[in-house]
Length: 126
Image (tube, rainbow, N blue to C red):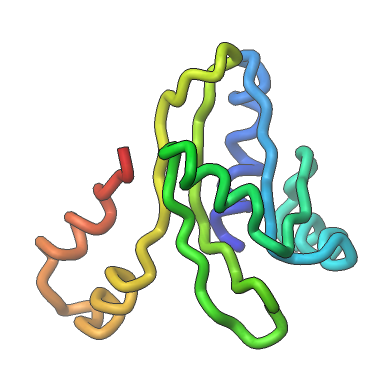
């Protein structure tokens, strides 16, 4: 949830520049009050437990949102991803977490090969 805390911090600057923040989650609406309380995120949200939006973003070649299997999520759990889209629909930037790379980094531990870590941190999907 730390990425939502960061987004909540950035939201005023995004809105001041004419932007809008929207989160899309695989969680049902009932969990949102707890998430808002923990992260201070006050922007718009869309609950998409079937991951239809993630699938559509991939079909349109905007961003690949990783969906991982997890107990309690019939259609899987969408992993963090970002799409910055202009008011005219132009895709300005995208990023998506790559779970297999995260697993590699975690297996290396804090003293692992920093080149791999830097490469992961700087990996953008577009």
